[in-house]
Image 1 (spheres, rainbow, N blue to C red):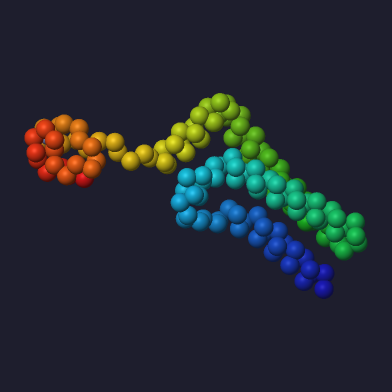
Image 2: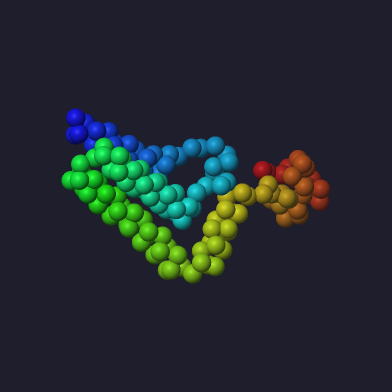
Length: 143
Ligand SMILES: [Zn+2]
């Protein structure tokens, strides 16, 4: 019975950790506000810490044996430590300002504005995108 319980628990834990990591939705919104590495690590950390809290609670309620508790707790702590270290590394290797600038430009690059003008291929004049023919030389505009 305890094995079944452990199996379900570790399955749930694993699922809770992995699902947000592998979930890739392709809505427009998510393409624009895509999660950064840092966001992802923060969320992972929250999930793991939440799981540890749950585990402590279950243990206090007497639902887990000492051995099981120690084992699972150890695994979770190791996982949490790994994530915390990753966050720390990410924050320290690039100073935070540079990190923020990089994230902002990455987000800006994803939201490209529509081209304001179309350059004529024969005379090089700039034409508004609504033009079908060049206002300068009358050549057909390629788009
Ligand atoms: Zn032209």
